[in-house]
Image: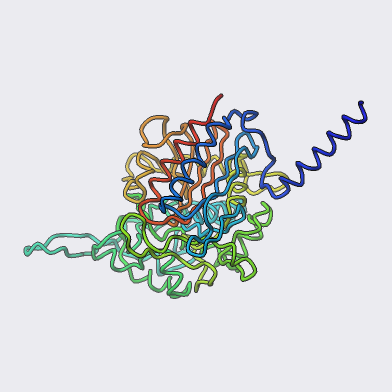
Length: 425
């Protein structure tokens, strides 16, 4: 009987290994890591209902707790128009979820003593060290006019990492300053080479004095080009060698290769609320430069490994990506009391959050309009993707969906509530 039980146990173990061979992290029953299987089932019920109603095409959700993968499911369609079912290995345009990966890349160069947080932007791009600040005024006819004043100091690496550079997105406003900038990271990369982008920025006015205000914009795109200038590598090559390959992120990059194009998740052609056509980047085609602010693609499996590395304070398995204190530094609040915080204007679901380096940081249990513990950190993508890490709860959540437009904010709040109500310890 002992041998029989041993044989059965071995067979079951081998079966489990084959079933979960493609899992990004070791598996665990939800209850063994303090989550309720019954409550987690609500995620599927809610998403399937919305998919049937035509609210979203599909999604892949990965939830890890205490270092174990407790939930990993796909829903709906990879391509609703073609009727292609969603698969767990679907590749998504992650938009601004590119930013935290570039932030980690920059902090590796800080650890390598090649970059310092106080370094001025002119160290790499002299023309960007001379940008004036646009001052908006109303003239006697009621028209908005723009004057310029010198910047009180240069933009630094820290400013770029925490979005206090004064470099904005043109699509985020209609003022004379906004009109000087390309609309977004994706739009810039589709239209301009890296050098053309820098030339364009060399002619703009800053929206704010450097260091005075958090405002969303091209800061991380500039950091990506700083990585290129400092290392002599393309941004994708650097991230592949230093982050993606060591972490086993096999499907993350700046373009979906032809051999994987059938796995690329596509949005609904029309916005489900307005009925109007909604633009969506085709990441199976390369851009003119690899934009660090929003041009990468990834999978739920890849990104949950990236998130787990952050939760582990820089390590995952044998991969040592950052020092533990560097991760602590990245995920601490970097906005002092004198810095204006306009994060809610960029993402209403981040209202009440502070900001670290490329990620929003939760200051307290109460306050923000979503749940979480103090010290949790997060960032999302305009294409409909989201991730957060809650160190107190030992939780990593990745939600991949091709759901751009304002509806993405609804799903960020929804998934937040569904995940936290499943915690039972």
